[in-house]
Image (cartoon, rainbow, N blue to C red; front, side, top):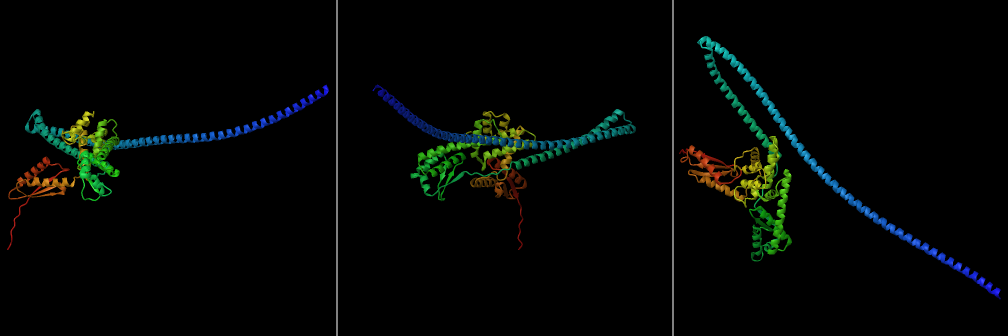
Amino acid sequence: MGIEVIIVGLVALVVGVAIGFALQRTMLKNDTKNAWDNAGRIKDDAEKQADIIRREARAEAKDAAYQLKQAVEHEVDERRQELKASENRLLQREEILDKREESLEKRSATLDGREHQLSSLAGQVEKKEREVAENLDEASRRLREIAGMSTEQAREALLASVRNDVTREAAAIIREREQQTRNEADKKAREILSLAIQRVASDHTAELTVTSVSIPSDDIKGRIIGKEGRNIRTFEQITGINLIIDDTPETVIISSFDPVRREIGRITLENLIADGRIHPARIEEMFNKATKLVHREVQEAGDRAVFDIGIIDLHPELVKTLGALRYRTSFGQNVLQHSLEVAYLAGVMAAELGLDPTAPRRAGLLHDLGKALDHEVGGSHAVSGADLARRFGEKQEIVHAIEAHHGDIEPSSVLAVLVQAADAISGARPGARRESVETYIKRLEQLESIANSYTGVEKTYVMQAGREIRVMVEPQRIDDDQATIMARDIAHQIESEMQYPGQVKVLVIRESRAVSVAK
C-alpha cells in the first residue's frame, strides 16, 4: 500500500513536471511571439519615425538651402550694383581725365606756337638791333665827316632819332599782339561756351500757375462745392489756393502762384475725389497727408540733386531748401532743373579751363537757393541765398559766387564769373523760359505805354514777341539827334521799370516824305 502511494506520487510528480514544462514552454512560446510582435511594431514605428525625420530633415535642408541661395543672390546683386557704380565712376573719371589731357594738349600746342612766335620776334629784335647799331655807326661817321660834330654829340642825336623809331615800332608790335591775344581769347571763350552748351543739352517743360484736375463726372462738382459752398470755402482756407469751377466739363482748375501750395492742393483734391467722402473734416485730413507727402518729395528731390552733382558734405537744411526749388519756377522754367543745368555748365567750363570743377558745380547748384525763400525773406534772392549758405557753413568763395551771379555785387573771382555765365546760358537758351499769356500781354502793353508817353511819338509797334520796339516819330517835331536821345531814354526806362527775359531792342524811326499830286 505504501509503495503504491509512492508510485502514484511519483507518477503525479512526473505528470505535474511534464505539465509544468509544457505550460512553461507554451508560455515561453507566447512570450517569444509577443516579443517578436512588439519588435515588429517597434521596428515599424521606428521606420515611420525615421521617414518622418528624413522628410523633416529634407524640408529643413531645402529651406536652409533656399534661404542660403536667396542670401547669396542678394549679396551677389549688391556686389554687382557696387561694381556697376564703381565702373560708372571710373568711366566718368576716365572721361574727365581724357578731357583734361585733351585740354592740356591744346594748351601745350598753343604755348609751343606762342614760344615759336616769341623766338621769331626775338630774332627780329636782334636783327633790328644789329641794323640799328650798323646804322648808328654809319650815321656817326657821316655826321663827324659832314658836320664836324664830336662823337658824343653825334651819338646823342642818333640815339634820339633811333629811340623815336624804335618806340613807334614797339608800340605797333604791342598793339598787334594785344589784338591777336584778344581775338584768341574771344575764340577760346566761344569754343568753351559752345562745348558746354552741347554737352549739357537738356529738355525743358514750361510750367504754369494753374493745374487742371479731371473728375469722373460733373456731379462731383456739386459735392466739391458742398452745401452753401461750405466744402469749397474750407478747401480754399486750408490749402491757401483758389478752386475755379466753371462750365468746363469734368474739369476743376486749381490756381495759385505758390507752386508748393498748388501741388499740395492738387494731391488733396485728387485724393478726396478718389475717396468720395468730401466734407470739412475729411478735407483737413487729406490736406495733412498731402502736405507730408510733398515735404517728403521735397527732401527726396534735394537728396537726388546733391547725389547727381556729387556733393557729399552739404548741410541737411541746404539740401531741404534745395529740394523746395523743385516746385519753383522762373518764367516757366523749373528752378531745380535750372540749378542742375547751371552746375553742369559751370563744371564743364571749369574743366575746359583746366580748373577743378568741384567748386563751380557746388556754387552752380546753390546759386538760386534764395528763390525758395523769397516769400519768407526780404531782398533779392541772390543776397538771401548767399546769407543762407553762409549761415550753414559754406565757404566764402561759394557764398560770393551766389551773391554775385546777378550783379548785385561785382564778381571778384573766376568761380563767380563762371556761375554768372552758366546762369545766363541756362536761362537764355531757346525754349528754356516762357511767360503766361496774361503776363505776355501785360508786358507788350507796358512797352507800348512807355514808348507812347514821349512827346513826338506817332505810332509804336512791338515786334518779335516783345524783343523789339519800333517807334515812329513825327519828323517835324523830332530831329535826328533827338531821335537818338529818345531811343536811349526809352531803353533806360524799360530797364528800370520792367522785368523781361533776354533783351529789348528800341528802334526809333524818323521819316520825312514830300508828297505832291499831278493834276
